[in-house]
Length: 413
Image (cartoon, rainbow, N blue to C red; front, side, top):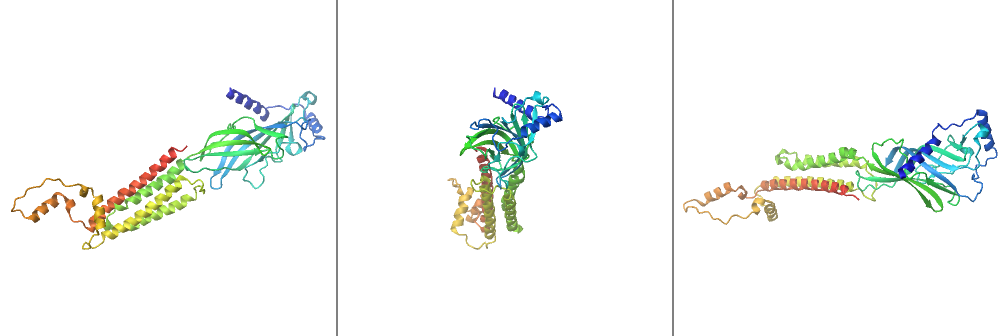
């Protein structure tokens, strides 16, 4: 039923807006009508016989495109057409007297009109709707239509918590700034924005629209709401994938041979590349700390992980190049035993019997050949074990942080 009602309203509006409505009559009859009703017309007086009567105006919004949505400056730029409709009791005529002339176009500066302004404008002026080139169209029964097409800059409160998988709700607030509600009330003609001529935006998907009236401090408002969803593919290709790739490459520093002489330079280069990348990326991220985007924490954690990898690389190399005669501290021995799975396993209680004539050194030699982990702990062996531990832990942290980020944005309210 509501859909049928909206179709009927759209049909009625199209009858008034489309140029197919014939005004009829001759030029002389049109001029006579024009001069008759403009003579003595007072544009500063509301066109109602009983001045205590409240004037009702209806708004209709055709959205043509979303030209820009800038989260850095919290700005929404839209291109569209506002249609304002009201009844003017001072301009009513009988078409048969004027050669069946049914409509009349008058410059907006010569007649009364409900003063409309963008309440949340970002432009330098007060956001008044209309300009001298526009006309007000009058129908013989007193209906007045005023079409205002323009490029509108309004504010938008961004919530970038789940950037780049965020959704935004932006509002365009129109106020009747000249009159209080006891004189003028404005309402939306329908409860949505007309998207007949809308052109898709490459960065944002328009999910839904709404229109509702509001009363604020004795003034009447109409609020047009646009629910937008960011198209995240651009940021996935140019932000997330390169970021994860750089972190994965950074963890591979532990796979390089210690004698190659490239490990420190490789880790530092990865850290510098990530820092430069984050600097460039931050220019395109929302400059907002309330709320802080989750991806901001992710980038910070990844930068810290990259720095830790560089420090670990230097420490491991310093251990690798220690003299083998230097004693290994007990702490390192304990850490080695903790992380060495083979050393953590208890030996079987089975005792092998050897002939009494077999030399004890040969027995130890056989034991070492059967179990290489029984070799004495050296600095080189310790550093190799630390390489494995650091590689696995760094890679695990990178994956866990990435998975946590996608889980958070996936279960967002």
